[in-house]
Image (cartoon, rainbow, N blue to C red):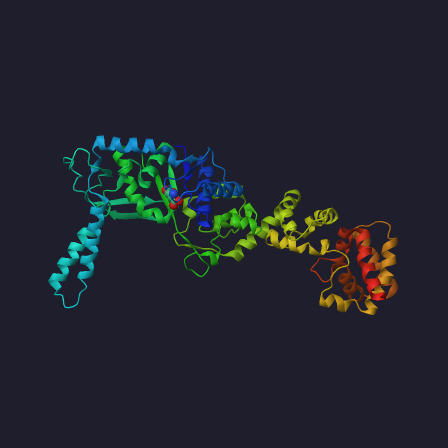
Length: 489
Ligand code: GLU
């Protein structure tokens, strides 16, 4: 059996982080077993589905590199096929035409509610209460249609829906890949609608027909669909189709254990791109969100494909932990190739202001040495501010302090040494400063602060020798001269 998985989002909004995790797990499971990963856009709800949402989902999946093995299937284009299946089920006697109108059904539910409320009235005898509750229970129970065993239509042109003839008697059992054995009694399954009066398929029918036609072997989805499984399996059985293996993933909660909300980071997946996370960092974090393999925290994609399995998925809800996402992302920033990282960084550098060619070159040179300076591309871009600050540099308070008369005097002497330095490299600059300190009897503690202040204006920066190297001789001397001028003025 060749494994086939699918991700089946409804394009009614962004691809949130839970959806991205579902897509990832389906992708990894298929790759793990040399199978196929497919994408189906469940756009049957015409009122709520939008092409923008579809585009956003495709964009997010593309960003994460979760490329389906076939072009996405649009569910709405298959309505004819769905209807054919429903009619075939009617012919087989596993579905039927039901003439109960939506209004009648609503009235039935309303009456059930009324009786339930009535049963709570004060001063009602126990016996009367029990009768009311039993009546309410029957009216509110999963609907079993009076037409399920046939019968003549009320009139020749009476509108009807097509309903599944729900299974009778006994427990229905699903061996879920994550939840284990799940049991539901048949009486909890309704004669669900397959085709509406206008001959359009319901979601429940469309999912089953599409999964069958796409040869899906493993359905991995959120546990909000666990109950639906019990309504979907009878459709497979009615058609004599193989039932796929189901796995339902626990929810993702906020870090306080509460329902995930915006405040917890329940953002659109592509917002994480804007926040400066790398797709591989995001993916590695999503992988660990509800799946584990021993104590290992960080997995490359190859490792994940080798190790992923349903047995590693936790039953308990996972907690979204943005701090951990940052740690994982920081790892992947350090691992990223310099050219690619620089390309990814450009928009974040631009967001900080105009990026002139010389600043750009300096940053490109410094990047391999600065990769540990941010957990996100936003932070990393900010770490380069000292390389692109415009002259004369604005001075932070402590920088001003370091540029005392004495400090500036030291810079003046150092500046002429720097001007005469033959080769401009980190090593030669570092050596020159050491020699200079020995010759003058000054310590690095005396030279460092004014020099750092002049070169960075007080912005965070690494060691001064590499900083001067990246700035280049001209810019280094220029920044120092600016302070000498100011000091002299
Ligand atoms: N379209 C459904 C949703 O977005 C998923 C259905 C499924 O995976 O079976 O929740």
